[in-house]
Image (cartoon, rainbow over all chains, first blue to last red; front, side):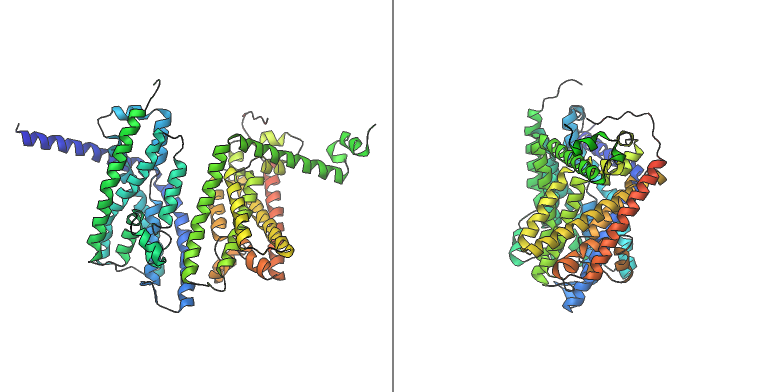
Length: 275
Length: 282
């Protein structure tokens, strides 16, 4: 066997392993599909409330657009933003449980990268949850405004999702891995979630922020998770899109390095008894 | 020598004078609350973290409204102060309900798992005993946050304070008895934990948005089936201008929920059966 073929074969087997983890995650999560749909009730309630709030706001202001958003665009923005946030699996609980129970020791002996395993599982579960959220949220949007015509926005949104989910995973993982040092990481992740809600652009598009705050947000990674994909689909801008996409992956590099560094430090410190 | 008060204590509870019974009950409730708090304080760091997290959570919404009102000074007659006072009333009202009567959010679970036996066997009013047995530690953060909002945005006069306390009493009563009512459905339909949680989330969510953004049928729902408007409108209907009709409606709703919740609970308790689980309260 030639060396390059052998190398390709190894690489392909490696990818197959991770693809299998993703597939297994999706099939196991399919068992909870009904539960995912029930959980979207909150999404429906919050979008309904925002519809009422923004309707009276637009009427009060007497303008058809606010910060460049028409009423229907703003509601669609909020539907996508909420759908992304509510789709995020709680990877910190899994990692924390694995560290506390010592199950991490079994995970480490497997021929899979610990971070890579969780990344693929995260993507699988997030994709399923997001699909459910988008079906329910989309139905609400269609009932209120009819079928949207986002054009290129659909493709751009799909392209941005991977980067958004990756940045979100890396930030969550960086906090979750603190479980090697502290007993509870829930508080840290809780605060992170609130940052996504606020300066990440889940509750309001960044254009509505005061200028100074908006400038600060531009230097932070949170906007790449929610604001970028939601803005891209409702107001696709061919000039901005590649910049946003690039910025997402520019954030991925230092965050991946940070996660790798925390993991390497944490694993050295790990001490599991019994089994 | 036995005093009159001590003599009445020797009688069976049903034969004691009303005042003595009420005093004994008040003492019992107070002791339960003290023990709950002492239990929470055993894990002081966890208590501080959990309560702190709730305060962070509420700050998110303050951020939203601050940015919103920075751009739009008024929404259908509601200003920033009104919205902040709405949050002060609803978070403190919810916080008090979950701190002092924490089990109103868990009755369905207690019924489903057969954990009511231990309360039914004791010589105390069962519903009251159930309600006061649990204290939600995180809700203390909500109470503190609500009081902080009142300190910043509230009216600091005797009348203002009295109105705020009245608003809190109404909001707390609505939260406690609405949840008691919904959770007591577990006696009749089996597992009502999911339904109870969803209904609670809906009321809590709607109680934190200005009532006047809703119109027509949705507004009607908020003043009837999902009585969140009786909480969210308190900053306008009681604190800013005293609206007699609204207040009478809120009072009637609180009384109706109290009567309905209590009735549903005790009727359900009469048909309650459990397995052979042995429970113990220390």
